[in-house]
Image 1: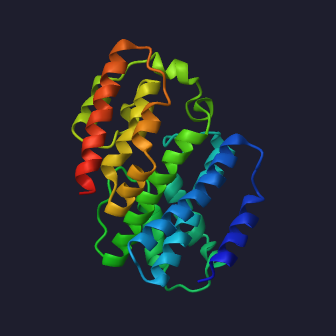
Image 2: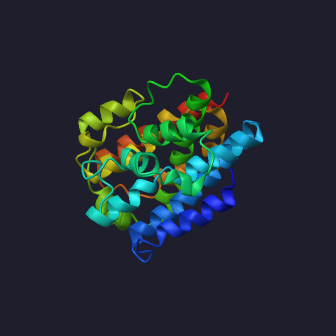
Length: 255
């Protein structure tokens, strides 16, 4: 596979969208961020060169369905479009994958990894190599999402200011999922702080020690939690407990 060729084709694909739109821009930067995180994970795991390149190719293409979702609905919400399934549709059912990689050798791995990358839980993948890459892209996606949540404005992500997020409370159902060390189901989020906690709960779905080491090295837990000023007293108390729980979870994971 030729990664430079794939990147040139990806840039051509992006010409069909408004690069000045904040949400489009966010997803372009995210795509390249995930590609780099995939490279780092594969390198740290000492994978063969072919798997390192394959991981990066999957990172490049994993969110290709997002751009059409934004063009049609101006939204990232899952009820507007299943962007992972749409990405598989345009790549494999409509044949666009051949624009990025000429060989069919890795099609099954690429297809499954993209289709499964945003599933609530990774299930139903039996092939060892396919499972490896499905796990890498899920970890890489979460790693770059940490960067996104730190660099982009709260208004772009949540539609309100950080101060407004900190004024809200955590819903009991969402807090319960976190306490059970589960990812937060999208449809159970009610408040803006629920959304913020759901980003932190991503860490419960990390697959590899090297990925968690990258989270720890970048101090993502502290930095994400501290981005919101918690003026709601109950929220402030609960988020202190969230901090403690995550720090303990990560410390045990990387031992």
